[in-house]
Length: 234
Picture (tube, rainbow, N blue to C red):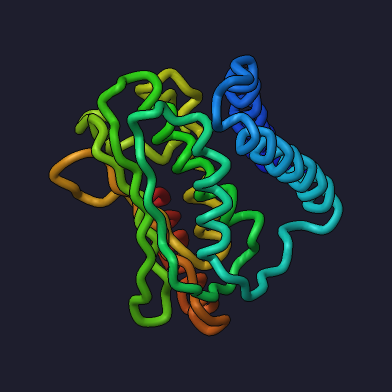
């Protein structure tokens, strides 16, 4: 496996394990009414970690997993539920409800959403200024558009230009989660971008609704990469 791919898997597995550590802190208070929900989340996230390890091993042997059609609303709900126990009690979450089939690698899409929600939860715990995390889903032409937004402090203007380059984050993390999430979106024929918003941070993920959309978007990215290479050579 390429070293970059291995480091990406390591980053996401580390994020999942750090979330489990937060679950353990919650379980140290057995009188907490959320304890049973936290136990269930712990078991579910451990299953996800095992799947990530299997995915890393498979990628080392056979390359990226094949895309398939699946209901992305279930993946949104799963990622949201696994983050729930790590949020301060003052923070609320809302998510999409209508079933929507996309064509992508389901494990990749989970990693994208988990990274975005994990980042928002980290900001909520460290700043205390984030009160709402919202996930919405819409269909635009041949793409499913997933928006993950919050009402936190937002992304400083000085950080925006290097946001997806894997540099250290403003919240103390490695800063690699967004770079990984964008690469995962693009290799599935989609996109990830930071949208302009009057308050907080808003990230937009686009994923193809059908195989032909995958091919069209992939072609656009190949053209963009070729243009960037020509510009660098000039």
